[in-house]
Length: 317
Image 1 (cartoon, rainbow, N blue to C red):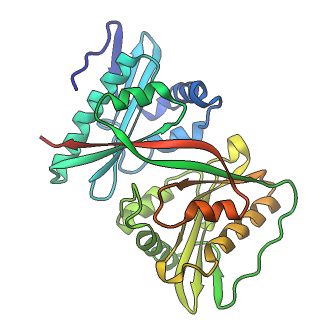
Image 2 (cartoon, rainbow, N blue to C red; image 1 turned 120 degrees about the vertical axis):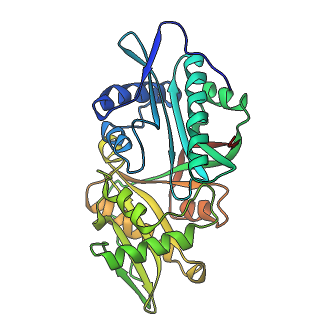
Image 3 (cartoon, rainbow, N blue to C red; image 1 turned 60 degrees about the horizontal axis):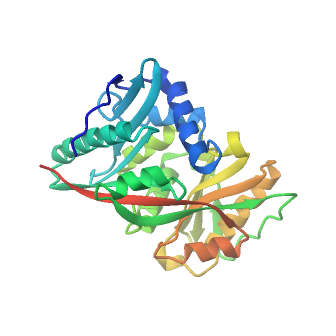
């Protein structure tokens, strides 16, 4: 793709001081698509401070005069075979320019990591027609669909009994527990769409830098003395919706079918209700190889938003 920045526009790299302006742009684009911001200033601050995201290379700001008109990013993790990208702009010409810059940087990252090609993923609200049309016209195709699931808490929720033979370890406050959780994450999610395994050190740095997460929010289940499941929560949706967010929930294959995931969810619901949260939110890949959507429906959650992931494989010249 070759694209020229429209006349009267300029660009520069983002800095942490741009967080408020970028937040306003992203919130406005999201509101135009789905009717609400679905984003907070803390989310923006975390994005700009994400370990591995190079402000001088991985992001672009486009301006008309002093007004911010576009924002684009590319972010890689693990072996950088898969790169997450995003772009926000009301003007299609600005969006096309950002996408061209994203391609260039993605190819640079691919070369730096010895790749002959890289895969680009971008999440798009089902209702966001302009971005979908841009991507569809440039060799992206739908990869999978995520549903945002939610359950509301209108009163106390009874905490479930811990299943027989199971021990619940609350919090990951020491390195040994964190390494166990990282191993559970890697084993239970490998093979799922969009998952890239990361070293313990990279994973730890990412979590530790996140303002909406602390290690007390990660819990591990042991079955007959062996760690087999985990749940990771964070505060991503507390500011705007007063909801806990289950960011990860995994059960090793050998322990599935024992009701461990349902237990972890119901335990989270009870804790959220007791903390005065109005609900619990999570995202589920509707093409997940495990029957995850059915699990969440069975515990009373309902889909409230649809997000498609669009994917393109980009040769690294």
